[in-house]
Amino acid sequence: MAGYSLAQMNVRLIGAERQVFSGEATALYAQGTEGWFGILSRHAPAIFALEDAPLRIVTDSGEHVFRVRAGVVHVRRDEVVILADEVSEGA
Image (cartoon, rainbow, N blue to C red; front, side):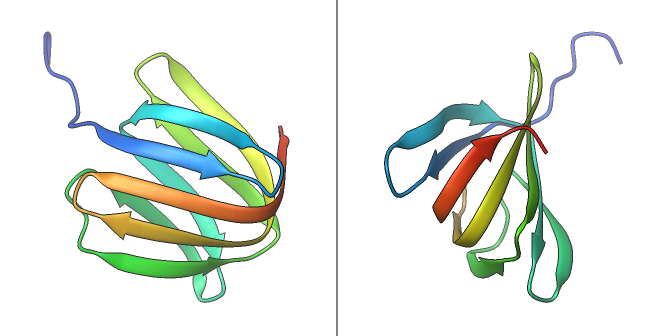
């Protein structure tokens, strides 16, 4: 569909040392303790514990992949905050 774009949400990925990513995203995919999950804009409020696995943030300009260790994801209507002990770029 020409001219159509997915709704955006604000995503922040924060490691123990610094903020690694902050920006608008259309989707986020990660592995929690209960399995893989995806988050889109307007997701119901939730908190997820993360497994040591890749985390994918999808933006209009492409996909950003990070490896996270010992983290949590806090979801509100149009905001997602990921806190992790360790974050590195790439899978």
